[in-house]
Length: 295
Length: 124
Image (tube, rainbow over all chains, first blue to last red; front, side, top):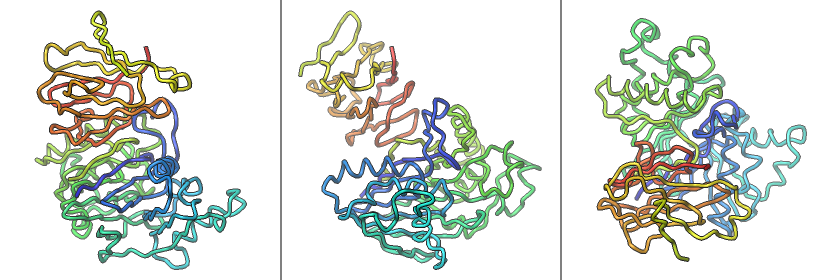
């Protein structure tokens, strides 16, 4: 059985509509995974709105079970939720997964952004049944898919997710400042082309993925001015994928300042870097409206 | 609905659908840039909401190419945008070199279907 992965929003930080981003898209983080009957959604950035429209077309009678996995509650990962049509249909059930801190569960943060000061419709008025769920470092079986969550380096914390079904593996790892995890933090300046070693625990979370969707916001030139902002060099994401034996790497969470041409350049540099490391990894830039079949 | 081949312009023209009147007024084409010699330079005009492209002679967009599946991809139009979806073809659908299951097409996209390369264009 295949896993279908569709990108509904690939931009980081803030939506960026306009001609400069027409090809890769301006909507913020949202990825849909379908595996058999399971519908799993990674993050609820502004791409979630259009996913909601597509789900309504596919399931006009409603009755959907949807699993929403939030990396963290920063705006660009939750802002689409109030506009998610599936949340308004009484016949639907939404399970939300995210930060495990009980006092700040993603469920309460989602409802918080719908208080009247921010949004005209109250969370309590949403028609769907919306239930908080936990997902941790041990695999959970969710509608036939094994899901594991792992903590990531990001201001305020974030979660990555590993999805497995019948030997197919997709890892979603956005808003992770890989460069603050390097075994040798000064290596990128001393020897930019050298492979940057990342912690084994993280590499193991990603190991053997058929597809790694990874935060790749900055170029090597940009990163030194953005240290601590929670995002890595794209080149370091490539190195993580190489070390973990990943088959395909989707560069994700594109910087809002990057035009389509700059995103493409980042992907080309990433592909070259993988080859220089002797890897047959495929590197590409995640693009809104593209669907992959992992089989 | 019949599809006519305009030999002089190497253009496939599908009848205008009623929805065309309200759809975005853009011309959409697939241009064959590489493949069997008889197909090179062919310009396929997309004017229906749904089209099958393949080697089957009854496909709306029929291309006589050995490495195409009989029904290779489906093109569907929504809100003036075309989505191209692989129909479990033998040789797959590649977007700018990446194997994909489906893609919302953008001007300038290069599609590889077996031994045929097509470039999608919008506008006149």
